[in-house]
Image (tube, rainbow, N blue to C red; front, side, top):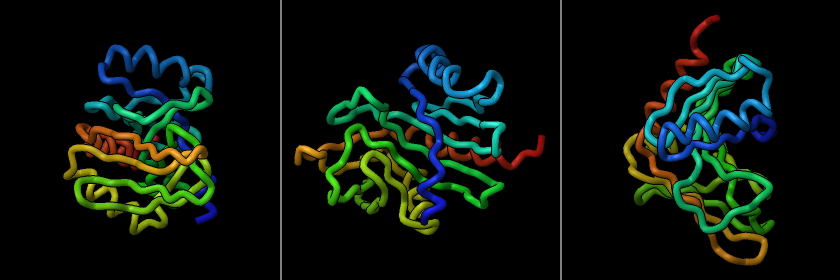
Length: 181
């Protein structure tokens, strides 16, 4: 689990429209990585797929359509990452829209399925590869996903992600890291 906690994809914005996506996503990407280091593999619904040459690492990523609150110091997102050189494929990670209370649970929900997540104050991961696979399988057939917890002030919150395009973005990210350059 320790190596899972060290692997974090960069956050980027995925707005509803592709035009807004191109504008909003370009700025943080340009600031956080050298030119040409990140390749867009496509935008699918509200999800995008990217490949970083460094590593390589590839991931599908989205920001919540609805969140209970915001934190100016970071942007919430959900991602499914692949780092083939580290033997990691299909790793689920979320960045919460608020910092969670130290002992608060984080629960990812898709339809009637609930998955407990583990992690830190603002980030959470599936507990293991089996949980990653179960979450991704549920994502493929679900219409929305929520990530819920309790913030540092004791208020419950939930970030909601539409899943339209998620399966295609997950597949594009997996294929992006499967190719040989």
